[in-house]
Image 1 (cartoon, rainbow, N blue to C red):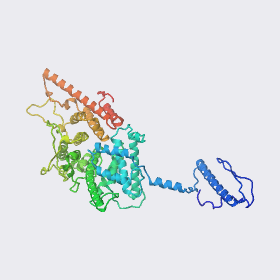
Image 2: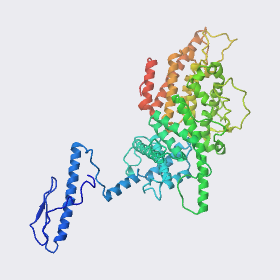
Image 3: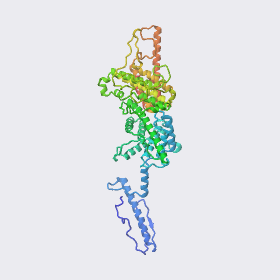
Image 4: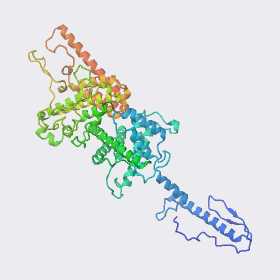
Length: 623
């Protein structure tokens, strides 16, 4: 009912008694749900005031009756097309404004403290894109003057800081903590970690969307403003990508990752950018604080580039998708890794792993038409660049390289962003002469956290499988020598990585690596490492199904030519030993997948179906 549908006297009782008379007690007939209320007869001295009071009461009751009748009619027939909403009272308007002003409740301080601590202890070694000083800045900006107060919509910096903290906590709960545990029941949060993490994730997404609409840079109809993404927005987008990846939203994860890389390309963090929010203090102190925060933000933006580059190339290889970021002379320097090798050893090794996998490599992997339909995609043209990639991957991770007996650390390739590591890429002509030596940085295994070792070793083995698959498709693998073996005067030496059974050696090395690491050091990386272990297992199963046992010999022993009884027995024992080891390796890897994030729900079942389809006689037990 609109406020102007009736005139002011519409509900006035027109049967007003004449002043000085004393009518009997009058009643007002009420509609259903209201009892009749007697109105006492006024005295002669207060007839005027009593009449006004009666009119006011009658008007209020009739308004209530009209509203109730409209509500009942709407419940029965739906709202009338010509009806208008009733005007809000002052209290309702204040409540509505308060709801608009406070889109989400601030995070409880115990949740923030827990998630921040867990981030720096578990995730920071791999993605060092936040610092304690920057976190303190976010807490200060997002909680004026304390966390329990609502957040104002007109403060963009406060909203971005709050959303960034929300997304950080969501990722921490979804990826690190056990899904079924309830960590915050003592502060009145009954949800499990997975449920509460999803709630925070959805709220972070909704808050981020509101900010885009308010700034006019989203998909809404707001006025278009200058497009100037902040570091906070890029970080929010990256954390939302990571949450989507944890939740197996692969397409959405790619969308958010692509947006994060695009935002970084147009990001401008200069010396005059001190971030959002105002801090108290004298003018000199304010200038000093802003200068320090500007340096911190510039450092974090540089680190974020390399984290995005590794994430994008890893995702692109896994799902055969293109990449955005390239290493050029203007790429941020990795000087911070050389300046503090103990803190950033893990990131430096990750960069060394993915640095050679540039757009040329991705074009070859994704079978880009300009590569596959020209001489650039021929085996002769890609063999050399793939050798360079293989060597770079082998040298990127500390520890013995494949086939090496020395367990000491290895020297990492130069971290200067000049792009010389791969020459001109995988689709170039035969590899050019090696460039002049660059300064080496040595990273000992003792400098790496167990979570870093797990990520680096498994990723390295997975990339070796990817290289093997490319060589298989291009035609670079060498078939085994014919049987019986050639004479000793013409020995056939075949590089292990060029054999058809190479994934068996990779799988065996994966068993040794994962058997020596705590399970939690692998689980902390989420579904990303689960998928890589799954890919290695699938390649192993394919080899076991397609390559005969005689052609996948990995143990030294007598050649399969004419032998005596003793040699024949040794050959039989060697074959049994190899077959037993292959079965044990596959069982171990499948058991590992079952215990990793997403393994019991998705990947163990997929692997089991693959084994049953191509190796039905193996009869591996279900988990």
